[in-house]
Image (cartoon, rainbow, N blue to C red; front, side, top):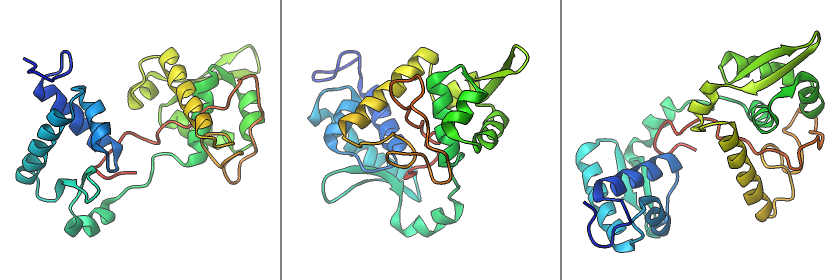
Length: 226
């Protein structure tokens, strides 16, 4: 049962699990305030108690990994410094190049979307992107009439990026666009600021009011990624 000071419905085990997920998936140091929000407890004291237990638990459980407290008070789940050289040897490239990510985002934002619209928005390189994205199982296509092909994201895409349905995906993308606009980026989120990635044609404004952001290249695969 949740004890005094815990958020509604959040017990110690659940709060610890939430903190672990936050540290693992962020791939970068996190402030205590961020971890308080992630834990769902609403309590800085309780969160620090859990973090202390997680630090000690990681020390016992892992040889090369650690939950470390940085000098500025932030926490990070990482490879221990003495093992960082080994980690670099096994690091992998992102699943998708930036240009293909942007094309995938465009489809997710506008779907279903035609080949012609994608060609107008993303340039001739879109053909290679579409082939790659279909090979990965992230996009499906459907013939409409004699010469129109429409693209949309697949169930595999939703599972891979943790999206429940198309409406949830568009809400997520719209929220990211708003956050980018609030930061005053002055350009399209994803790709080069204010334009397309290198070597790609600049996207047309199209019928969408705002350009889509990129989804994460892939779910966090290892502590300290990204």
